[in-house]
Length: 232
Image 1: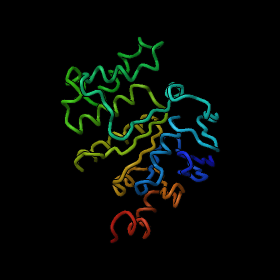
Image 2 (image 1 turned 90 degrees about the horizontal axis):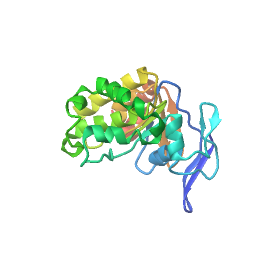
Image 3 (image 1 turned 90 degrees about the vertical axis):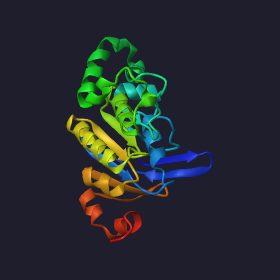
Image 4 (image 1 turned 45 degrees about the vertical axis):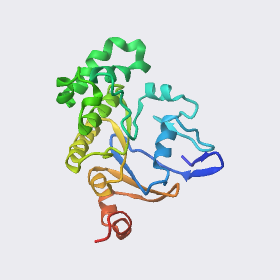
């Protein structure tokens, strides 16, 4: 709440009041340089706000490290996937479990859970991640995030490098994740498709919230159409 974030002397987020609603998909749209990725990094602890509080499950978590936030249930799927291409699908998933070393005995159960969501990954669990298609790599990135059993999943640029059909199929998976009880924050340049699946949406511009509301209402907004959808 009331987040102010700087990179050096550069003011990136200006008094931002943002809330990800429980068990919903919260969309964040806006132009490049609006501060969307900075918001994500601030929530997961990779960037520290100069002022303001990050509240999770009723508790201020500004003091927690990124690893401690993962243990609390906050996980990010970063832009660009960031997989280990020279490791197998299964090895990439196992690495995500590192912050939970004391719970290693649960890893097989977690793997089975994500394999039920992504059967293709079970079939290819011994294949190198670098040999997967772009869509399969994004599936693996999502699966790797789910292995941590998140309560809040942050997805930055899900559609990056993907064909539209593949992106839409992944949005269906994001809806399934929400229906499993996970809160999702999703950032993407594909404004129309994202707003069609989201439960609530924010428009972030120049580090400030320009608009927020029901995505269906935003899709009927003249401003959204003229600014992000090329007009009617």
